Structure formats: C-alpha cells, structure tokens
Length: 59
Image 1 (cartoon, helix red, strand yellow):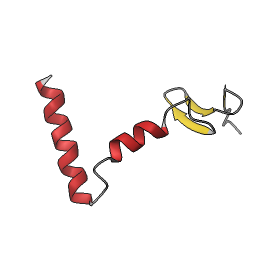
Image 2 (cartoon, rainbow, N blue to C red):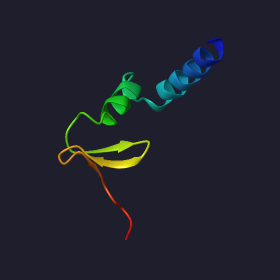
Image 3 (cartoon, helix red, strand yellow):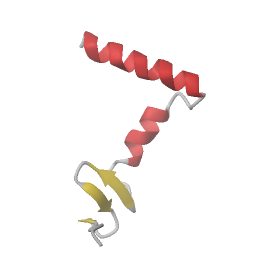
Image 4 (cartoon, helix red, strand yellow):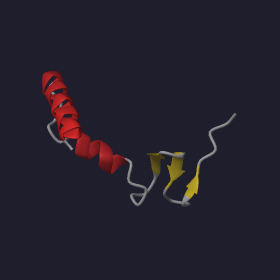
C-alpha cells in the first residue's frame, strides 16, 4: 500500500509540473471504459463499443 501511495504521489507531482488538469488520471480511466460507445483502448487492443467487437488493426 505504501509503495503504491508513494508512486501515485510521484505521478501527481509530475502531473502538476506539466500544468495538466488535476483530474487527468480520472479522464484517462474514463476514456478506456468499454461501456462507453465508440472506439476504446483496452488491454486487449482497440474495441468498438458500437458493435461490441475487437477491432482488427492488422494490414
């Protein structure tokens, strides 16, 4: 727990230095939600929320 808290503090400090919104991590987390429509980034790759399928990005 202490290690995770220390790492989060480091991330928040770095975020402040960039001038980014303090809620940037929450925004990034929300963007990856697969229940929100349209294309999302997931651990498995790109996901199409409209068709509820993975997107094949191979050429």
